[in-house]
Length: 291
Image (cartoon, rainbow, N blue to C red; front, side):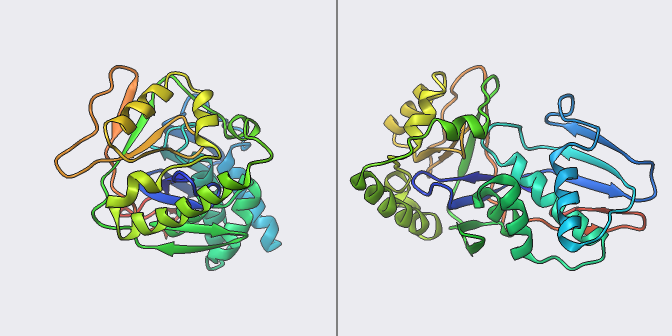
């Protein structure tokens, strides 16, 4: 299940990219029930079945009108929590797809999108986690677009800053000027063109007037890095609700070292979304494209 970076500047709640940073979730129906975690968030995620994966599994079973069998759930988490990289969307999609397979049903992307969007509150990260690549989400539907192979994403993750999506969303204005909405509509359309065919347009395409500056104001240690990258000519946007940043490196120009307290992950885009494979006694992602 891939990490995802949503909004992509002006594409608020509609655009997202899948990144090749993947969680791997396993369900074993022959082991005693329980939940275990490794990797990111292993010491803080609940183990009593109240986690996002388990909740999504129950939601999917309810939608199918069936009961889940007893199972043990384990996960190797590579997506950092509360960093704007779609960890909760990945958990929701993983749970729905695992429950669907466990109950003997074929996956239906539209159904997964509907259930996961209800759990998440918005469909952008969910769509990219399901389909991979670049996705445009609208209502309970999504369209996938192949990103340009020339994109060189770099994710900048602050080690000591977190931002819950609910906090980031509550800070946003409830009304915006018509001129700002018009600006964002044009930039969102341009972002699709830039990501799919014209990476040279990315710096302009990632501009936004609705949410990024508000969210950066909540993150005083992140805003100077955002501005520095802009000033040095890099296309950059807030990843999801933040605090991570998504920048795009250029031919012969990499994102500079920005000092202690930051991780820079140069991860390629992930062409596919969630995939599930069945073993003799468990369900888990395949080795090539893990969840």
